Image (cartoon, rainbow, N blue to C red):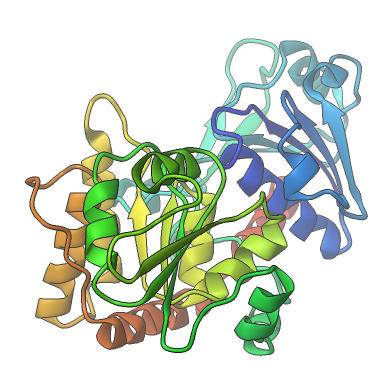
Amino acid sequence: MRWDLFCRVIDNHGDVGVCWRLAADLAARGDTVRLFIDDASALAWMAPQGAAGVDVQPWQAAATAMPQDAVIEAFGCELPAAFVTRMAQRSPPPAWINLEYLSAEDYVERSHRLPSPQLAGPGRGLTKTFFYPGFTPRTGGLIREPWLAAEQAAFDPAAWRAAQGIAARAGERVVSLFCYDNPALPALLAALAPSPTLLLVTPGAAASQVRAALGEPPRGPGALRAQYLPALTQRDYDRLLWSCDLNFVRGEDSFVRAQWAGRPFVWQIYPQHDGVHADKLAAFEARWLAAADVSLAAAVRALSARWNGLGVASPLVLPPTDRWTDACVRWRTHLRALPDLTSGLRAAAGEAR
C-alpha cells in the first residue's frame, strides 16, 4: 500500500518521533510512505540514515502532490485543502485516517474507528476514520515493530554503554533523564544521591536543568554522578532505555518506548493550561497499576504526582526497584498481547478503500 502521512511539528521529539516510527514501520512491512512535514530538522539526528521506502517531503509539496492509497492526518494537523480536493476527485478515493494522540481515558474505546462523513468543504463525500492508539483490545494499540522483542532479548546493556562511552561502576544504579522544565528536579537529585547512581542526561531541557543544579563538569551530591549524552537516534534511544534501571520520560514517543523497555519508568505528561493532563495521567495509572500490589501502586502514584507537580512539595521517594520492575514486565506482557498500531492502521485502510 502507498501512504501519505502528514505531520505538523509542535514538539519535535513527540510528533516527529511518533510519525517517523510509524512511517519506518510501514515501509519495513513492504509499503511505501510519503511523509509530509513542516519541520524535518529533528530527523537529522533522530533518523540520520533515513529508511528505505520513506520519502520525506516538505509540507508545501502537498500543494501539487496526487493522493496515494491511504492518507494519515496525524494528531488533527488538518490537511491542505487543495490536497483534500484531489482526494475527493480520486477514484477510488484514498482511505482517510485521523491518527489521534495516545490516551488511556475511557472515551478512546468509544471513539476508536468511528467514521466521520464529510458533508461539506473540499472533502465532501469522503469519510474520515478516527484511529486511537491505546492500551486495550478495543483501541488501536501501540507502535510495536516486528523486530522489537527479539532485538531487545539479544541486547547487551554493558556492551552498548561501553560503545557509547558510558562507564557505569559496579553496583551503580543507571538512570536516564528526558524531561520538560521541571521544578521537581532538585528533589529528584536529592532522592538519587544516597545510593551510587549514574544519571544519563539527554540534551535539551534535561541537560540545561542538571547543569544549573550540578555545574559543569557535574558534581552531584552524595553518591550521584551525571553524564551528558549527545542526541541519540531513535534506535539508540530505545537501547538507552533498555540499558537503564530507571527511566524518566516525557510526552508520547519516549513514554511508549519506556513501556516496551520493561523497566521502571516515570512519565512527565505534557502539561496543559486547563489541567486536563492530570486526568489523563490518572487514567493511565488506573490501567497500568490495576494489577500491582496496593503499596507499590500508591508509591508509584505519589512519585508520579510529585514529578508532575500535582502533589505537595514533599521529598521525592522512589519505590522499591524489584517490585516496580516486576510490575513493568507484567504490563509489557499485557501490551505485547494486543494488536500493534501499524497492523491496525493497515487493516483500517484496507477496509476503507
